[in-house]
Image 1 (cartoon, rainbow, N blue to C red):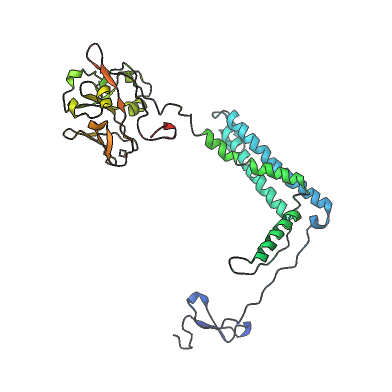
Image 2 (image 1 turned 120 degrees about the vertical axis):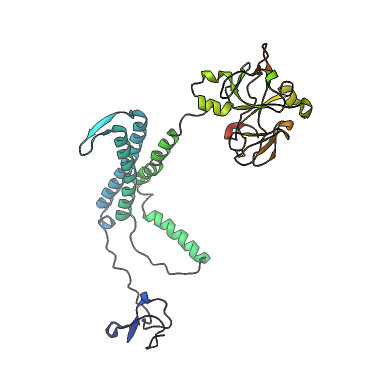
Length: 364
Ligand code: FES
């Protein structure tokens, strides 16, 4: 506590300003007691209301209405031009812009149209508020959070009256141009977003390169595999032989990668798994059904396949059902057989989409 009895802060003299004999500087921290602060602050009140031209001159009001409608109309017009330009202007074309030089015509037109569309609705709303909407200031005193029922009714009726005073009913030009100006500008964001998502994938996520008769070839050697080369306990990383014709090798390989294993046929429990394999040789998609990592680890003794990303574990003896980890679906099995030369071939494409879930996948 300081000598003068003020617990915190510096005491300064303010004899002449109505604060009493002394006042405490507020930047010195916490204040206890009155510290010389005035008993109460006077309400400065509101400045007197000044009527605007449109308040008493119907011609001025009409003029303001037209100006607002013009701004909203400009906004709508340039939104439409924006959409047309987005599709019509060649991305490669350039134009000479004074002060900038040779630059992309597409960027300039799109940017200018978007700016005018957004500015039009913004400036129009401000101009409307400043010229035609009621501008009398009102004071609302603090009160408990929930207003009384009478107050709530009063607010509703004041809002209704406010709408009437805003002359929405009387000025249909503004009403309808505002509707357009509010409804269309979001297109400047939605159209580029929707058009920029790229081509629709169609069935690209559901199909791989595998087709009936495609030989299984080693990855990366790309040599075909005879059934008698796959001994019990061995595992091969394989691809379809047709991968050599792919124009997008990495993408096709990422979906078509398969693991080939040979088990003792008696260890295989589901009949379907045995039927889709060949004498204990089975082929499963290598793409984890969790989020698509390659399932890279095979435990010979337990016949478990492990995904190193989040430790999902698939049991090969049970049609690769998930026995641990976050994956929700078994690895899809590729139906295989042998051709006339004894080489392993696909007997059909995958019967379901490989990899993680996506919206149109169809079933869990
Ligand atoms: S991607 Fe395989 S467990 Fe997550």
